[in-house]
Length: 561
Image 1 (cartoon, rainbow, N blue to C red):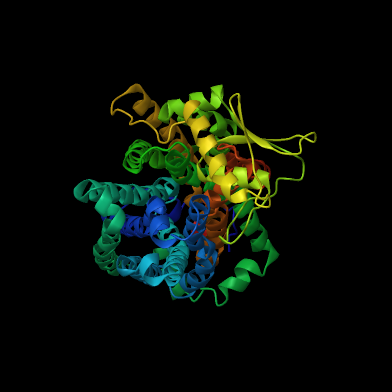
Image 2 (spheres, one colour):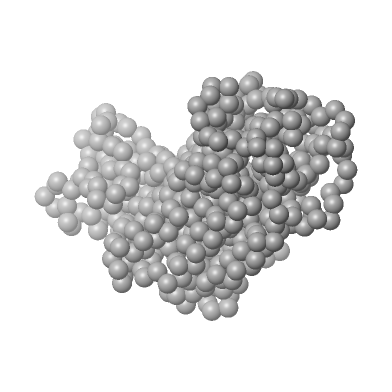
């Protein structure tokens, strides 16, 4: 029996024939179903601000944003467990029936959000129920991707796997784009006020229609030929979990696939598509519809590059394209996000440059101001002033000065003395301090929100260019990754083995990126400090992947039974 790394030499599997009409139909059908599943999953992220206002009402603005992003990330947290459950099922029962089950779970849990009461009606039970449905979504998605990628790869001819699995790689971005378009269309149809109150439920209701279409599509699919052949020969694994993770020979490949490929791919993916959207809305104060249009246009322009880099990986290899994407992200994220600020909110960029905000405080007066439970109480002058600035979305720096007894906030040349919760006149001092800071920010030119960006203007197009560059990075790391993961593992345990590193990478390293990056910003004050997380992870993947991941494009996956 051939082992991983075997090259195809002659025979039917090495023949680079074109796909048959039936195989193309299979790939189209499985890709379309996966688009709908990603649409369901990403509705939450695109409408994060509205979800926060309806389900996390009791928290302060900064904590509300972090809590909403953690709820968003909850779906990612359970994806590896879905990968284990459904990966095992896919390697024992088959690819087709497994991702029929996953789409049913995903579609139903999304559709039920349409009828979910808000915090105003149910209190704490509302966010609890929302998170429960989010967890079901995560479990379903944990089983979906590995099945879809494996299914398509096992239908593709040798020498074209990168090109054909790239269609599966477009589904996440197309699903996000579909979510953005449905949400934007609904907003324009019923107006912002009604959308915020009840109209946000309409995109969730649409998922019910997509579920019916998806199930109909999946029922028409046939089983993967590689799995069908292996099953007929009695070669399927009886214990795929043990073979995948209980044997060091395979486990070390799983670990390398995680640290040297999917972790970096994940943070580049979520920075370029989700964090960029959150950054525009939360820090640059661009209105939601405009931000959605800008990101949607960049996705439309960038999506064909999934197919370009997937096809290119069949010629030059998967590894060099993925590693280059990680390296470019590491080197350019800071200048790209600075440029995004300059074009999306030039008044803010000018104010930060001309009148920087600084919190000056005695040493040891400043603690960690994360409030993930919503119950933390800050009492020191430093922590109270930083919390106020974070809630207002103000970029600031922290300077410790041992000569001070009482700290202050400096806006340009103006200094506002801070207050502590323990001082006798704290109740009077708080509104006085906040009023003075607001007045100083206004006088220094800090805008309450970004000015409307005229469609067709230079700023509009430069923002799209910047966002598109980040989407192209996404296509570089994501386009070839499915083919690489499929080729790293033998057929009998492929579904299980590839699903876990993919979903730990994308579910944990990537899925928690918005919450982690926003938390770093809240703790540090600088709106760009959250970029350190994706830069460090992408840098790690570039080093480990370059040194230890082998090239896989010439592997004969049929030989790995």
